[in-house]
Image (cartoon, rainbow, N blue to C red; front, top):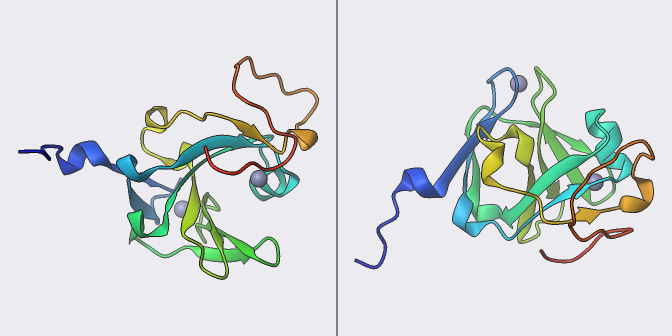
Length: 143
Ligand SMILES: [Zn+2]
Ligand SMILES: [Zn+2]
């Protein structure tokens, strides 16, 4: 038996604050995780930094409710709960192979530790994070 993992080990669940939206994703398909300090993430959440994971779109699904999309730039939309406003996902308008999901909306965010910082050029000057992760002034590919 080469493949003995149970679904409960592989599937991570999450959702919005009010419970209208629930989703599931495959932990073993995550290809990246990091903190984003860009102004669009800051303004769209009201938080100084947002932690995202990245995975192929086919391994993420809403299992309860449908989000409201908001076009935060010409090519990308952010998916929110229409009731409580929790931001769940960041997705390309013209389909791309991967999408991003907010790590803190997982039921157990500890399962996916961020491994890098991106868009540090707009990090709030009073935010101090004592980790040794790679820091990129703007975006970065992979990881
Ligand atoms: Zn909600
Ligand atoms: Zn961002």
